[in-house]
Length: 203
Image 1: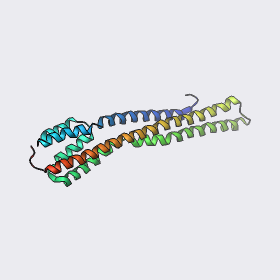
Image 2: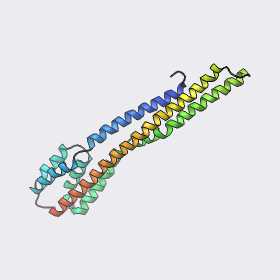
Image 3: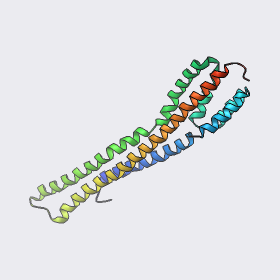
Image 4: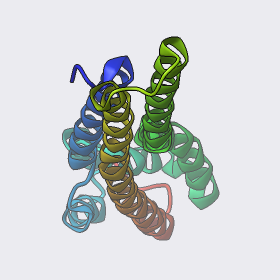
């Protein structure tokens, strides 16, 4: 740690931020993703009994954006299929940014961590040449090694942070896409179900 200098500390702090963001997003997606098939079956069964109040209650009791999108469609059923689609589009403008939140931070860390490592390496070499200029003679191996240690440690740390962060970002993007696909499928299914039954006859 001492040989890496202050740049190494910056890289480690950046890595800690990446870990915190990954854990938070992973838990968020875990809560957001539900068994949409089972959820829709339950909603479909009560809607077939023309019990909208119970259908809304099921949505309220189910966490995640899929349930909230289905609830929006149910509450706007009187507007027909077009009215439900417009309401779902507006709801999606709220839900999608929530799901994508902080993914940009992970992508940024994956990109800048190697650059921070490279910066530390450059500082290490600058340190070596600065000492050579001050002494006016070739450095002793121990003096030369100090700058090299700083450069190599920082470069290695930057790569060590960047690679898992990049993998973590892609993994979270895949989880995000799964949630978005569930939202799209559920929205299409609830529009079809409510549209086929019409706006009236519910209680």
